[in-house]
Image (spheres, rainbow, N blue to C red):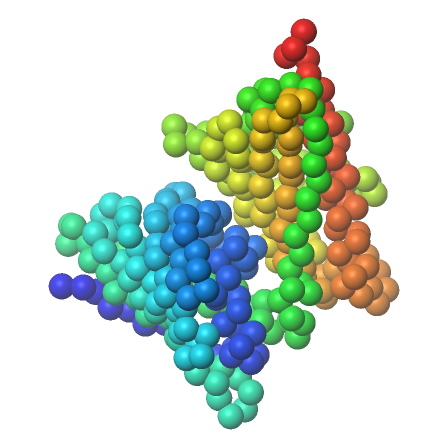
Length: 309
């Protein structure tokens, strides 16, 4: 018999704004704490199929989901196509109810089955914990008072290197060697399991001299892509995720580093001083994060080029 669970939260934001965040799963790694990465497998205006990686019970799990989106009714129905044991089935629905006072009631329903009755309590606890975290994070972003496309920013840097994508990929994958290769990296602790999931803690210094410690989960799909999610992002950010991609071209390889950030406007103003607008904050983040990224890209390019000799 399916097990049903319901979680709700009142969010002080219009239903349309909240729906947009729920409907766009590409935002989830910087909005929802458990979500590490999302990769679309099929997509249309009202339906989609994707693979999602998330931290569940302290471990990184992955599954494939299908969703049906209804922007008029403001509902999103989901079903896991391929589940992770001991779960044998998982489905549910997001639904939004606008209230007269301008707030929105957000409801998250789950219905699931488990293969082992002894695992029910563990799965209930995981669903309860992740649902509460997701609803809280949804409210945190929606209640900032800015449209989501103002507080969430995506930017990329690309270099063409004389070398193979495989060599460039290996440079990025072996981040445990970065302290000896990259001047802005002081320390890296790296653990990798057999599934290509890495857990990384790193101390860095940005171009303005600020020191940061970050903790990340990385999904390595060699030799073409490494996706990551910072579990401990910089102070000015509510979330930070990204992706390294490696593509073969005639001259060698194209390496692209993409950042997606969710800005905390109040924390950014406090960190930078003065009444900084979001445009200034976005410029600062692009310079700080992009500067370190471009330095890493240059070193990755030189490393890949050396493989030719």
